[in-house]
Length: 107
Length: 119
Image 1 (spheres, one colour):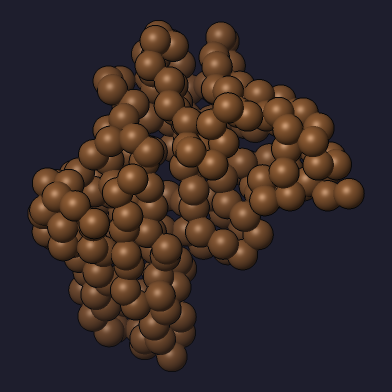
Image 2 (tube, each protein chain N blue to C red):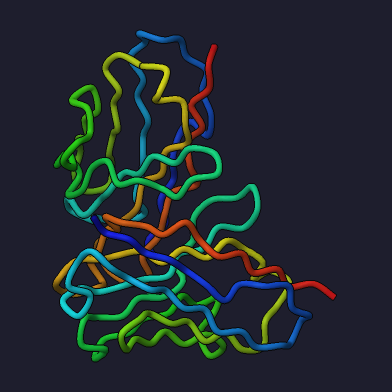
């Protein structure tokens, strides 16, 4: 199974900060990576697919990049609504796997 | 608007069986792959099983293989046999794409149904 390692597992940041979350795959997954946001008590919400394609309705401050084994989710200017946990997921093959998550907290 | 509503979760003792269902609306259900994803309390996300639009392709996580079976008719189902304590989780129904479920991301999710396995 393809393993995804997210870092950091948590971070504290202030409104307006630029935030970067990394996801590393255990093998080459080309651009087959999605990013999700999950708020407490809610299901995850798809932000980005194919490593860099923003879902409709997702603010442009979110962006994704990378290919192969190294991927990044960037929030250019953190907003109050962005405090949540973020997960990456590989869409290369079964079993579909998720990273361990990154919790973004208020500093 | 896509809506996914899970049902069937409850408290059961280890070794028992349970069947989860997911009712879908707001899109052509028969055209899309569907999946189950679970989340243990306070933990991350784990993909459980996926099924293609025509049921010809199914996949299950190693942790549930031989015990859980995904199926679909007019709804999505997950038959869970020989439940273990470590199966305790919130089970989400999630919508995939219109092709191979092995390459899916999940663009819509239900609110989840809670399964608690405890003696």
